[in-house]
Amino acid sequence: MLKKLIVIILAITGSSVSYSNEKWQLGLNEPVTSLMRDIIFLHDVILLPIIFAISAFVLFLLIYSIIRFRASKNPNPSTTSHNTFLEVVWTLVPCLILIVIAVPSFKMLYKQDTIPKADLTIKAIGYQWYWGYEYPDEKITFEANMIDTKNLKPGQPRLLETDNHVVVPVNKVVKVLITANDVLHAWTIPSFGVKRDAVPGRINETWFKAEKEGIYYGQCSELCGSRHAFMPITVKVVSEKQYADWLKDAKKKFAKYPENNLVVENILKN
Image (cartoon, rainbow, N blue to C red):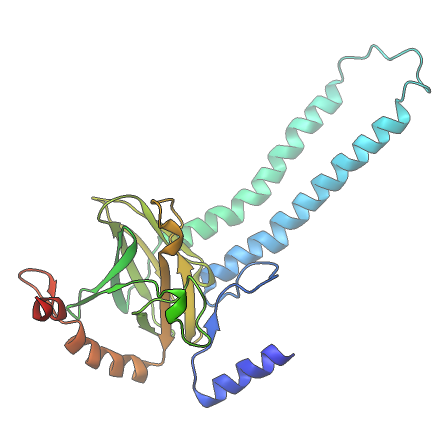
């Protein structure tokens, strides 16, 4: 109840709400895209009931077998070794279960891979061990490094907060181009239902449309070296006006020279 009250107060005052895993949390992250809602539906409504039903059925068979066919009750074991009906059943039933799972799975995969017309395109580049980002249409680029625990501000989650945020407008289709500069990485935001491998020399694509403003966290989900656990992703979803204001400042702070792909600030420092 207290958590809900805090969220409401922050929403009223215009402060950003943080969406990340919590201690003792059960279940998946709160969905803020249609993709994640589909994933949660598949998990909660289809997979979990099937898993519980199969587990209960197998447990029943084990208990029944132990009681019904125990040695004390069956001094002369049965020599039955073949039952056509049972073999047909235990072949067809798993096939039907897989079909029930496959239909919504294929629909969801198709939706994930069919990218709508994008309102914004971002390129995410995995490095050992941080992420680099480009907004190709706006000619800006920057790097996002994890903030050390000692430098965290109140409310910032450990191992998830970065010095620079990916900023996107709410209710807009964002296309993400994903690649890597050195080894395999994976760009993942649980609340968006997005996870794509970052492969050197190859560009993968994904998309999302965040429906709530706030700060959303993810991490590299591909084992990429000794600092794999320290490669977070932070996406800030804001209103269109806030995005326009951020973009105006970002074009000055992160402006890119097209001819050599360098950040202005890095050139000035050198």
